[in-house]
Length: 501
Image (cartoon, rainbow, N blue to C red; front, side, top):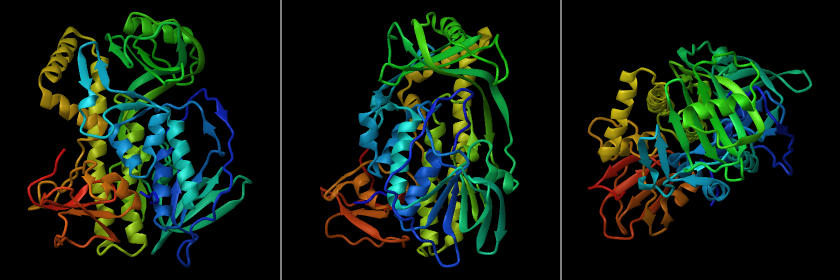
């Protein structure tokens, strides 16, 4: 079966390596009168997953990126959550990524709160520690194989909406100004999104925390756990292993609040670790160090006519919880099948289907802002009252299993669900687990990029119309429940009693 389904902010100091794709296939041809069916702006993980999904479905896609083609071996994102791994599994990519990463089954925060990820109802009951560039490598390879037309070193300078198309103005690597006529445009171009600016959408919010330090180092002493996190009021620190001898360190010192471009050295990183963790574990040989600030911002809308926003172009928040890249990839998985259905003429109500991207994903973005913000504010707790509140919250989550399960569901993405119409079955809008079916695992069947109808052998349930082809699959037992599962792994319709976890 064939798989189907934003550029983040840059670092102050970065080491990069030049790579050039080989044997690129011919791009998928767009409809008549268009240079491309969909123009994706921004070649980060969000943009590449979206573009790969669309091209695999037969949609003509051009992806432009202002940076020259390069893959940094240092990136801020380093964790892939369970729900994201499920979405990558539905594209045949998860197992390869897991082989090269480090699974973490337990999170311990503030020396008090323990979250057991092994209890997650998923094929991937863990947080996978792996650098963002490994995710990008897989997604770029898939997008190229599907026929995405990559144009690196090309910067968007403006957008003009014209009837049934969008005209994009850009400057190519030679400095030549070009135009592209597309049916739709998706901005996945990060915090400083040129697409968002071109359509005049504000990006309201606040700066939550200044002068966060990131570093990749080696340690003389191995930390007692795979993830080491603590906050003491005036400092917090986080240490995670990449699995190859290098460790990612993130830290903050209330007493040193300086501009992002202020130089940072390993002595400052060691000092933060000692303040927050009681030791620096013998940090040495930093291969990369950077300083940045963290904002909480969200665009009021993710769609303006034929133009969409996804990933950091639509929402940005603190790095606490490691949800940034994951939320963007989930945005892309939600939008891609809807956009493909409309472009290919399969959607009975195109506008309603496209509107559902914002109505489903905007509340998720807002929830991630709240949860990541809560974590970072707990880490920054300074007064005795704030620290007592943090201790009570940790004790509550440790003692009340449903509460800790809900917290893990939010952070991992497993617990995210979408609203359903009044009177719909209670399973509608919920994530479908990876069911074992007569035809194989559900998420293997989803690799076709189509809806999957699960029912009892021999039954023909009367299901609502679905855009495109519907793959029929069957229970291995006499279960009578019927499910219509969307290409992004959420239940579109159901009848009967329920499904197993």
